[in-house]
Image (cartoon, rainbow, N blue to C red; front, side, top):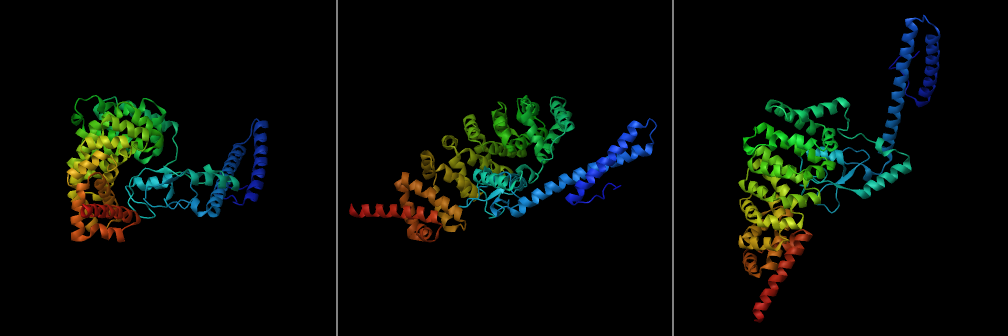
Length: 464
């Protein structure tokens, strides 16, 4: 009889072997049942036969999965393969690469790339304007139709990263950790640290927070009761807020987290009074939550932009990018642009740009806000024009030049007096003319618009 671990892998041989093993097992079991004094050797043989049959079953399943997987990978069109995993995509998403032809990846693999701290498109190496992943419904439908035609079960084609699942012991441990969040300070700190690590390394633990309406309030309880956020133990506040950030990464959690009444007010308190790590992660949580339009509205109405702008003005290097990303994402909604301008965003952002701090990120925000009329007036009053012209003249970044000239065109549209500064720049450096000739297509269009406006003003003056 075959020993475990030495079975053939050929499908035909495996089927024949399974039939033989079942017959042998049937004989041994009958012998055990019929013989009141059967030998232990017969029982051992039956047990060994069962082990071999089990191994054979596992090998057949593994062989079938591998066959389907290999078929899906080798025969599928290239556009259905993830550039990172080289496998057939199950959840294709688009990254904000700024390219005309957007790059599509399988969600778990590009999410792993982003979670590692990368902020560029893996294929183009272009800096992402944001890290929100947009489902590519067209590609997904095409993959599903192709898989159906090929007889491939899509759910079996590739194993998700971190999709190892949870057993009952894991769930019990999770509930035990949440219970400790209402215990002593020592227990709270231990539990918060472990929840932070679990929700970082194992996405399945993030899902558990969807299963219970009380899970998020239990997590936040240790840092909700204190009158002063700064009086909370630094490790505890940081671990709880970071866990909240980790939970928010899961798409199905975003609405639940944001609509939990205590969450956004608590994040605002953390922005104002937490350690710098806590404040940075609170900003990152708001950025992640603001992927949903309904959350953008909720965050804007809550007044969260003001503490974000205040933290931006403080200028701590650790928090700057997270804060800038959050402000940008929230202000994609037009109503929030007015709130940001009212809270002094233009002054703070222009100061950073003039000091050459994170110019790329802040120009992107300024360009976004420039569609709001009051923002444009503030830019003109605060001396934005010379700074924008200097960046066009000195920068080697096409994106920055595009943003600058787009903002300048809008300023000139609302305030003709600023054309004088641009005319002086033209007389000295031909900055806009140079961009109109050698810039990107968008920059050329905007620059030409400014030059036409300048020429019209000159002609009117001469006619008068």
